Length: 289
Image (tube, rainbow, N blue to C red; front, side, top):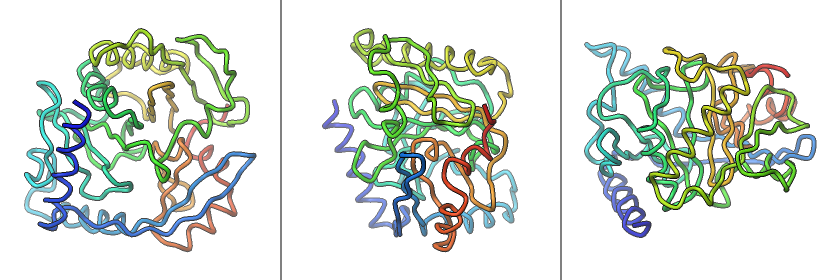
């Protein structure tokens, strides 16, 4: 199953790159350490392409243009259950960056459902990696159509381990924890992998852990629309961060910032991040503890 999914992803990347549907990635990056935590800060040229595409979409005859309904055929990987599709991110920040979109339109601010987590689990249960969600514009979402995202675990990828390595190693499965050195409101939940032997069980585990984390940070997980938040999940941990705003000092922050990976649209903004400090930058767009 994992080989088949990975093969389909790579075949789609190859075809989409050849046709021009997939935008090339050019990055310039640096490592910034803040309070002993390493952050990777990248200038990604594809973000500039993304801004241009959004301006183009806004000036079309139909202002509410939705690139996911339907997605570009060259970017579509295939179904993930009955309600979702796997699609390549046209403007990827990391290689093999996937979008997990609902087949029918749902708002990005709508509550995440069991079906959403089952679709995410169908990728993560076979490929691992990091799943994440930007719950609304203030949380870094650039499209209204509901979509989770996934990136593989690799040396250049974002990872929750930058933060979870400092949590107590003996926390039992299902335990809720906060990181003592993180100044923003958040919650980590330790996942009980022994209770997730297949995709269905892993989806249940992600859904239950998400709801537990929401309760811990004071978010009603069934509210529609939900308040802005970010979600990140690995095979070991899940975290939820309530959001206050989308950017600080012209630097936009999405969920990956809370996994130690920051993206800027201009190389000079790397110095802005260094001067502010990554922890203070993230605190400015979240809620201080």
